Structure formats: structure tokens, C-alpha cells
Amino acid sequence: MANDELKQAWKIPEPTLRRLPWYLAFLKLMKGKGETFVSSTQIAKEINVDPSQVAKDLSFVNISGKTRVGYDICALVDVLEDFLGFTAQHKAFLFGVGSLGAALLQDTGLNQYGLEIVAGFDVRKELAGTVVNGIPVFHLDDFPAKQKEFGATIGVITVPVDKAQEVTEQIIAGGIKALWNFTPFRIRVPEHIVVQNTSMYAHLAVMFNRLNSINH
Image (cartoon, rainbow, N blue to C red):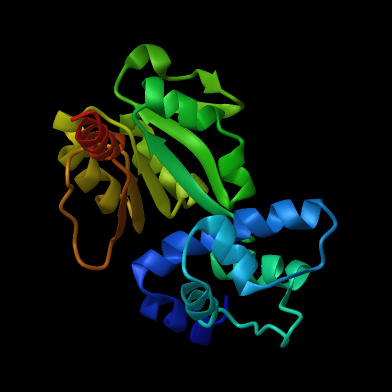
């Protein structure tokens, strides 16, 4: 992504960034069916958002549709994948090879979207030297040396909640620039560090609350 596009990306509202991958998934389905063009109305109907919102979201991306024809699907897929960073490989380390961490190491889909987990780390000595889905696991003490070797920019955090902040500080000290936090703990980081919190428990709380509302 060029510098001007990178600056533009930082101006995009987060809700838009969350919707763009939905559009991309739908477009890939249409491409697989042999479709060549799609309108913002079609996308909106599938994703269940207003057509004007789709048009506004896509205005942040460097592509425009044709009147009465719509968007070229192949071109829009390519532009979205590049814009979202899915076409470049981003090296990552995973910290905490428990049930969730091991499952993420097994997820080959992450690599297809540009996230290449090159190593896992854990404090349990019995896990050091093992391999999960072709990905080596090391003791956390080996992180500084392996960072010099691999030069990862992203840290995936799946450690126990009581270790989240401590491990976060170790990761940042080792030169990691972005963190994908799967713990329910709201980690504290310097302003220059990028953080994406993905707490499944928070989503569960919302789902349970809405389910209870329906039942009562």
C-alpha cells in the first residue's frame, strides 16, 4: 500500500473497516459463481446495510462503479484485498499455546488473509520444542532471540488473563508493533502500539443478553 493510501486508511471510521471484509467475502462468493459485476444495492441486500452506506464505505477505496452496471467484481476484490492488507504477509508471534492459542495455530485461513504466524511461545517447558501445524513452539524466554531471527511485527495474545499485561510489556519491549489481544483484559500500551481487542466473552455477553430479552 502506498504512503498516501496508508494515510487515507487511518482516516477511515472503524465501523467501515469492519464492514469491508464482509463485502469482500460476498464478492468472492459472487466471483466463484461466475458473476462479473455487482451493484451497491446487491451488496447492501446481502450484508443487510443501507445501499448509501455501501457506496460511502467503498468511496474510501480507490475504485468507482459504472452507472447502471455497478462494480467490476474482480477489480473490486483485488482492490479490497490490497487495501485491507490481505495481499501482504505480516509475520506474527503467538503468545500462550493453550487451547485457544493452539487452535489459532491450526487455522490455515489466517495465512490466506495475510497473517503468517511463524512461532508460538509459552512458559510451560514441556511445550518448548514441539510443533503445531508446522509452526514451532518455544519457551517465552527465547522470544528476544527469535524476534531477532524472524522480525515479527504482530503479537497474538492468548495467555491467561492474569498474565496479559505482563506478557504485553515483554512483547512491546521486544519490538512488536501491533497486538491482537484475545484475552478479556484491556491491556495498556503506549500510543504508538496498534491494538485490536477480540474478546469472545464480550460477544457472548451481548448474545446472552439479547437472548434473555427475547425469552422474557
